Image 1 (cartoon, rainbow, N blue to C red):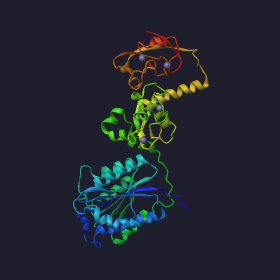
Image 2: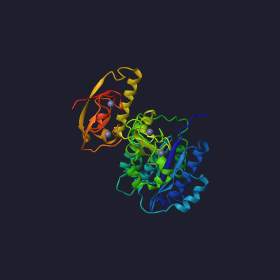
Image 3: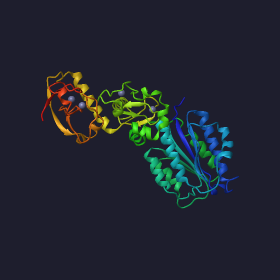
Image 4: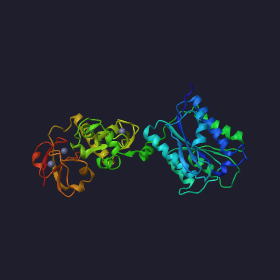
Length: 397
Ligand SMILES: [Zn+2]
Ligand SMILES: [Zn+2]
Ligand SMILES: [Zn+2]
Ligand SMILES: [Zn+2]
């Protein structure tokens, strides 16, 4: 059995006024509708995994069928009759825009399917805020191919052809009903024997569309429903990876270093999430999937740095080279804000309290250690091992 590439196909159907011309029997729109039903039926008979969505562009531009609420092809006739507002302008650009958004969300949720957009139109587009070529550029940046099926008379400026060329999709010019139907079947069978290979820029694409982890403040502000879904306040302040309240690297309490998945609301230490990301080779360490719900999330960049430092230290410890208090570092005084995000995201390992941005703090002299202490707390560790890296702290101020 030949291997097939599983796709998510978002169909954009032009339902505007000009699609009701009778140059095709009974009209352009009805022919496209038939072709779409055939396309879905043909693909489904070979490959049940391909996802379909439908966007209609007519009196309004809207998502008619989402990837998750796909129904049986035989239901589509009724669906068209009941849910599509025919006529009006042809805002193809807006339709492609919604298709791109749906693909982005589908990749955030799962990501295993190859995104594709198929546009059925006569190419008489109504200009909107973003012109179709610009939309195609956005799709290209996300490696979403746009196939276009064009009906009606040829014009000098062929926007559909341009869209397909820009996105490495295929353009079909259809002069008859048979042309339209056979183009749809060609698209339905186009994944046969194709093996999907992740492009080199795949990680960059994921970085573009990953959603940042949320802070407690952001979570409370715009997603109180997510908070409500979390069972009890105890788990709310615990990391879903290490199951602790305190950050294993910075020792900061959860309200400092805890972040929440924007989709399921599960809390994680940013450092635990960062290490989780680094163990996932697809992500390049900057993006990862929530261990709880698999949603695509972004790790704050300053945390990646902290995690790298931790990794170096672990390596050093393993090699046992120069570890065990035999060496010492001179701790220096800084204004907290001059230490940047490292200070903002950490807490003093002695008292577990955060820093005021203008206060004087002491940084462990080990260049590979990020530990920052309050001036009042440094006495606790002076001439003793740093609570984070274990090197002896010697005062130099
Ligand atoms: Zn943790
Ligand atoms: Zn999640
Ligand atoms: Zn302190
Ligand atoms: Zn240290």
